[in-house]
Length: 361
Image (tube, rainbow, N blue to C red; front, side, top):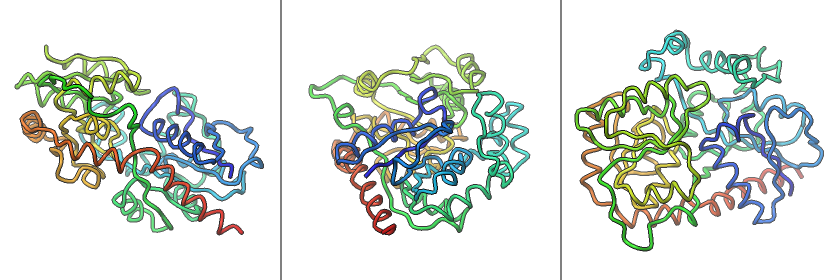
């Protein structure tokens, strides 16, 4: 079986959780005997005849999907990674977000897609997307999709609620590299401090975290670069930082694992997370967690973490205080290693591929 992954044009230049998911899923599928190539959505010269199946990612970027789905004529599956940015314009008062806040979430995404084509050079290669608009483009893709591979039942339910066109699905949980992210072999004295591993951008909510913890002076280290188009937000975070706040640029996985093993608590108080890969990684390394109540986090972390509301400073402070005082549960770390590893992700993905191929015969 030969499969082509197609994802956003900035997959490698603006790495995110989807980059991790795509690279590791491809690696483990290859170990199972599947031939997998990865292409960027901006590539208009793909030889589709070399493949039996396409696998797309990020349904909220339908402009990246619709051109290839139509031109190839191949069956395809989609990992939706269906999150929502609609709360950010209500809370982050940057002029651009004030303007976006005047529109519903689908029009917001349409405007952002067009804006990226001018600012980032992420050209919209599908005229059909421009004609249909954002919502109808997603509906068009879903009606023709052979299978959806959400990261959780919660994610699928949200997609189905917004798009009745969403059809067959199989949950394929997000995962971690267990060879890198695990509890240290030798006991380590952890810093009574916070770590936050994420790109610096409004959805990850670093500014609210800083403002919420200023009174307590809780030490916190942010690891990550500014996301594309968010250098102003990054600078705002730096200006707001108090003495115990430090910023470290993007690090390779081995160094990130070392940091997880040195800190008591990891925080990801985002405005939305389908999973929060860094939360999974940190838990596997023995950190206690503060995670956002927004998104699909409860399906992954249930009662093992402290939840907070990303827009409520007191909620963030209380969750941090509890997490810093709570002992990590080694059984929870073990469960993540067993259930959320990329080998399992690849196996479940391959099961879906086989169903799709069988249906074509």
